[in-house]
Image (cartoon, rainbow, N blue to C red; front, side, top):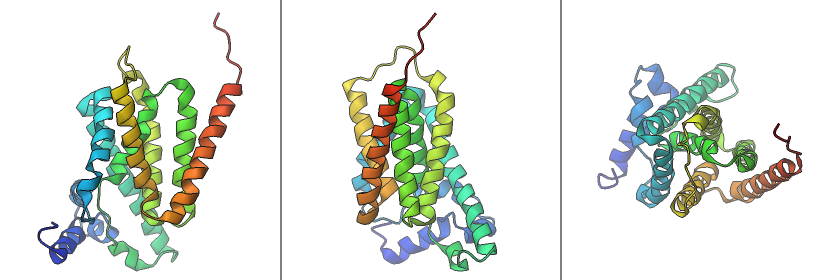
Length: 230
């Protein structure tokens, strides 16, 4: 698409966007194809982060569950956001021009995968991890991140919900080796970039707020007395 130039790129993005116009025209194939299309020119620079995120999930749960999580996050968040936009347009809260907005990329599915990694973390770290990511997503939405930010928040919630089922799927004896910790670190950095985007003001507020929420959750967890086992 980069080689074909801006005109061809804009045409492809318009055809495969999961916006209200295309969905209303019955182009349901966009629900899948949009994950493989991007409006950014230098997408390959982000591939290392995506690879680390997906590789860690695949190591933990194998390819079938990874694909299921990605599809549920991508398609589920897309449909929920589309329904919300349709209602907002119907009641006059959002201009009808939004129905033609570009909406492509794999970020919804990737953020859902990020949320499911909660299941693989040790129990004492889960509250901090969850509180931090939810705070970052909420701050970006409040600061006016648009429907894409709302979609990321929805995908994160879907991933967190799926993590409750995936806890039993973590292999017995699975350990957090150095290589897995590196994958998690790079994948989490990629997820943070997806959530805050390139908007510096949002990042300057969302990242510290998320870190603070994670610390508060960790302190609360540490201060909670544990029941003794019988």
